[in-house]
Each structure stands twice: as structure tokens, then as C-alpha cells.
Image 1 (spheres, helix red, strand yellow):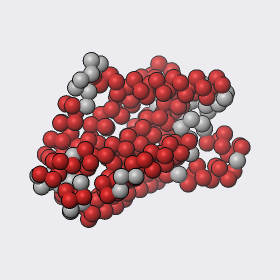
Image 2 (cartoon, helix red, strand yellow; image 1 turned 180 degrees about the horizontal axis):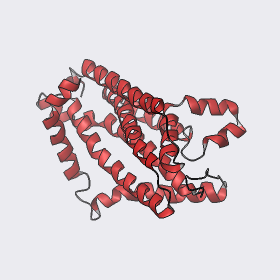
Image 3 (spheres, helix red, strand yellow; image 1 turned 60 degrees about the horizontal axis):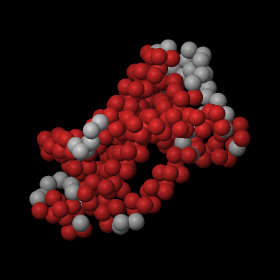
Amino acid sequence: MLTALKKQHALIWAFANRDFATRYRASVLGWAWSLVQPLATLVIFAAVFSIVFRVQAPPMGNEKTSYAAYLFTGMVTWNLFSSLVTLSMTQLKSNGELLKKVHFPAYAPVLGASIVQLIQVALELVVLIGMFLVLGNVGFTWFIAIPILIGTALFAQGIGLILSIMNARFGDVMYIVGVVLGALYFLTPVLYPMSLVETHSSALAWVVKLNPMSWYVEAMHDAMYTLTTVSVLEVLALLVGGFLVFWAGFSIFNRFSEDIGEML
């Protein structure tokens, strides 16, 4: 797998450069739009859940409380997952004509588009860091966020590669995944702390804990929000788990993408 990726790195970067140049080409604000949607969602959800539903965020590392900061920490992690899954799933069809005419590894446009998406997530992370700097919530545990996000990206990309093949064969997959991601979002502790679920329903708490994305989001909350040191074993588990899913997704993709031009 690593040998194949290294061999095709120039082609992957070519697709990334193409997507980078065309994503906001007709827009006046350009890449600023990549922050408008998550920030607008943050403002709306923060107002609804903190004012209307009175959800209380746990204390930060500096003992202060900020629901907006808690929410945005979870959103950055969730957006990394959902955006990579959704974008990867559509790349084969959007590059269908090219795949029919030219022979090249079908994973190249998928991974190329994902690289561009990582840039958007990096911008969101910069905004999150700025928010914590303003709030005075700074700690060395921030560095733990890097392997957590890498594990999240690998986990999402592996799923995205599998779904891209399925979506190329069955058009309904894209709509089913949209519904599943919508439900999964509310079963991940992004909008609420895990303690709130455990207080009201132990059964629902177990469902949330069985959701793999809960592990990544909770680890990010620990590293960035509460400034709690995440154990080395937990970080390794998130990294290794993400890599194994990526390896499995890459292997399945290569096995079923040989005749991808005919399917499209």
C-alpha cells in the first residue's frame, strides 16, 4: 500500500492542485467560504443548545466554561470525518469521464480531493486555536491533538474509499450515507458532554460509547478543551485503528476498482 502511494504521489498531488485551483474559482471570497459554514453552524447551535436547551459544557483546563469552545472542538473533529467520507464517496462519479478515457489508479482523484479538504480542516483548527488563546485555555496537551486528527483522517479515508466503490455501483448509497451521517452526528458527543447522556440514559450512553467517532471526539475534547493528558495507549489505539481502517479500505478499493471505467 505505502509503495503504491509513494509511486503515485505525483499524480495524487496533480489532482489535489486541480481541486485546489477550482474549488472556489468563481467565488469572490474564495477560501473564506470554507470557514463561513462551520462558523455559522457554531453560532446557531451554540445559541440553541446553550440558551434554549441550557446544555452546560464541562470546565476547561483553566476552570472557565465555554460551550462555544466545547462545541467547536467537537465540530472540527466531526467535520474532518464527515467531509472526507462525503467527498471521497463522490469522486469516482465526478471523474467518471476521465477514468473512461485514461488508465490511472482510481484512488488518485479520491486522495487528491481529500488533501484539499484537509486544508479546510487545518483552517478550522487555526480558528479553534485562536479561540482558546483568547479564552486563555492553553496547554502542552494541544500537541496530542495532532495524532488524534491523523487517526481521524485515516479512519474517515478508509471508510470513504469503500463507500466510493459502493456509490459507483449503487447510486442509492450516497443518500443512505447522508441519512446515516445525520444520525451518527447526534450519537457523537459534539453537541453535548458525555456526562449528560450518562446521567439521563445508561442504555443510550452505551450506544454513544460504541460509536468509534465518540472516541476521537472525546480525545480531542481532552487534549484541546479540558487540557487532560490522553494516555499513550489511547492515542496509539486511535492511530492504529485509523490506519487499519485505511489499509482495509485501500485494499478493498484496489480489488474492486479494476473495472471502474466500465461501471461509470
